[in-house]
Image (cartoon, rainbow, N blue to C red; front, top):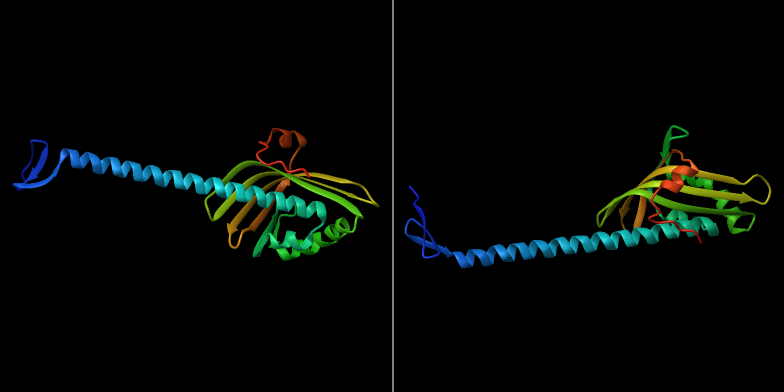
Length: 191
């Protein structure tokens, strides 16, 4: 049977000295300090990830404004999926690229003006994954034809593989201008 007692600030079990109370306090302080450093490092990593994601969304906006089809498609993972709530469909992003290409080329040639801005209502991420939720505002104004002005609820799933890549774009459905105004403008890129 183990006998535990403390004598003269020393823990003793079965007549063996384990450690002093002072030594035990030092160990506890070191553990607390180490966990604090780990938490600070994690917070720094998450802040760096958010900053990188901010740059990612700014590049997405720039790509649409400039009609940069190559840069826009490079922002997506090769196996990315587009989910459309309006169409009630899910399909490879390559099919969406086919639909978007002409508009981007027209923008690049000056035949159309387009822009997209993002506002986020929730941003969940670590150093290698992200789930971003919010509303985007897309405007297109072709030389010939009617301007289009859309607010769309979205969810985006991203992975960090040689930079951030969109793995899933879920265009949930239409949003209102009031919802846009109410959304937290964490990131509102207008160039």
